Amino acid sequence: MPKKILIFSLAYYPNFVSGAEAAIKEITDRISSEDIEFHMVTLRFDSTLPRMEKIGNVIVHRIGWGNVATAKEASSPLFYLSKILFVPMSAVKAISLHQKNHFDALWAMMTYMLFPVVFMHFLGVKIPHILTLQDGDPYEKVFLRWKIRLFTPLLDYGFRTASLIQTISVFLAEWPKKRGYKGDVELIYNGANPRDLKDAVSLEEVEAMKQKLNKKHGDIFLVNTSRLVRQKGFDTIIRALTNLPTNIRFLAVGEGGDEPMLKALTKELGLEDRVIFTGRVDRSVVTLYRRAADIFVAPSRSEGLGNAFISALASRLPLIATQVGGMADYVFDEKHNPDKQPTAWVVDPDQPEQIEEKVKEIIANPEKAKRISEYARKMVEEKYDWDKIAQQMKTKVFDSVISKKLAN
Image (cartoon, rainbow, N blue to C red; front, top):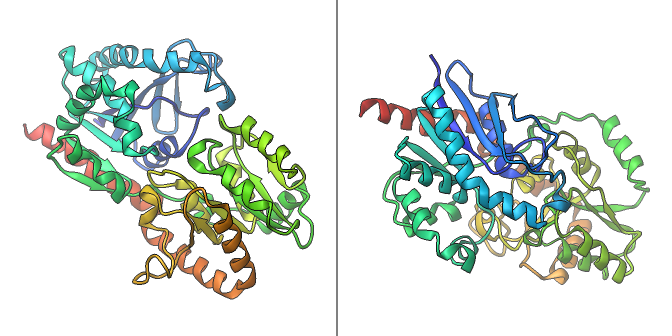
């Protein structure tokens, strides 16, 4: 009989997919259902989605009534109300599912998913739980903002009682002890998009994408394939274009709450013919956008790790990036990290002039850019491969927690 694990994730496929949701799918798809049967409780933001379906190796149970289908609507009051009500609803749903399935462990994806776990404990259902820290916001925003402070004792209880905490960066590995946790912390990174890592796109497909984007001979495309939110610094990239040659354009791949503001900024700066907003793009296609571009720019203001940026390195794209949060684990340059092999070109947040400088440096030194990008690709192959990560998650996290439960 397979062991059973119940996952708590606020969102899941097909909508609102970011690094955390992709990590769940990449990991669970690589673990046999004969070994572990995964269930998930998530919010039904989109009322057209079924209440229950199997996606890969996860049986997804959606709760709530939502009618939010795109990230553009995610800033609505309904979205926030749904998030708040998700905690008690998901705890009740989880207890009902546990009565039928007898779960061996719970898996909370990101800090706030500890709330339903704690509710279950208070309702008398205590199952060993795993916490994965993938939070992209800075520590202060997660724990110290006024909306959360009143409830931090609940989060702290969830931290302290966790059977094991897994983090995706050294930056996040410092959080558990700050919240009173004294158990084991496993550092297991997220991986690159497999299509980037396995070179799963053809030259013909890439050329077709360039034609679709109207990329002309001599054009140089900067690209970022993250969510369009303040954290990612898209506005900094757009401002950097103003002092770069007109053949340099920016490809903003994805959607997010900042899209109207970014489009307004583009218009204000007279850059409408140099910034391309793609809107929502399926993860299976995003590799083509990266391969059609020339330089990936990631001036993030905060990051837990930055899956999209690791995928950029897997695609052998020169990477201009900050070293905020978990990005410091793999973003190195000669100036800031003289003892490490360079993998990227480092800039500070909110500094468009630094992006301008690095773009010009990369263009002027193509051989150096190629050498650094090839080394970065090898680093990704060694440390950020989902096949290896899934095996680590199974043995070091899931099997470890379940075996301790059985021993007790």
